[in-house]
Length: 139
Image (cartoon, rainbow, N blue to C red):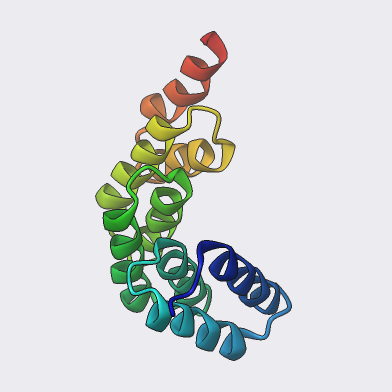
């Protein structure tokens, strides 16, 4: 018998609580268990990617975020966190595209807006960095 959506949601909620508590090894084991039960569970890939990025393993995080996005491209948080990992990996152009995609999926996404502006500012593109908040304020 397979794991139901409700059971998976509850299991991932416990794993996320462990993650927030700093019990990273336990959280990672639980995320991986979720993927053994449901190999196409995008939230588990995303959460595992977050954990990998948190411990400065962007090379591990990137394919996990990519898999989550491939399974469910409509989740703006997947794209924004992918952008964060790309930033850590110094793939700035790709990070900019990921943040822009997150914003296109949810216009009211302050973290993605800030990260996109920061990427542009750090690149020295001050005019483009300022356009984002101004365009949003005009909306």
